[in-house]
Amino acid sequence: MDEAAIAASGFFASVSARDAARLNTYLQPEGFTEFMPESGKLLKLDAKAFAKLFASPLLIDLRLADVQVQHVGDTAIVTGTRLGYISKPDLTPQDSKLAVSMIWSRQSGGWKLHHIHLSVPGPQ
Image (cartoon, rainbow, N blue to C red; front, top):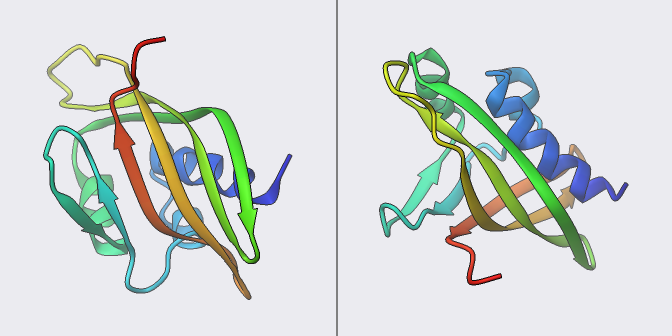
């Protein structure tokens, strides 16, 4: 499997496992930006934001499917489908299916995440 695809899948697996050490291998000190359709806002997420998430009682199960990668030099555009949920513990989790595109760069410390764009998939 492509190294950037492994990093993208590993990113979501580390979030689901609340594994801050592994997650930090994918983050730059300044973090990354994320656009989510629910908020309509561009978020800035870093290790501190994930520390708050990991300390919360929220249920987390995120994974990546249908992964495709396009390389442009040391940059990789990873696309696919983000499956899963982040849910309050008193609610029944509802799986979501969102189209995802991610921008990664190969650096001396491995693949680092720059941006995630999530959107509702179009008609199939």
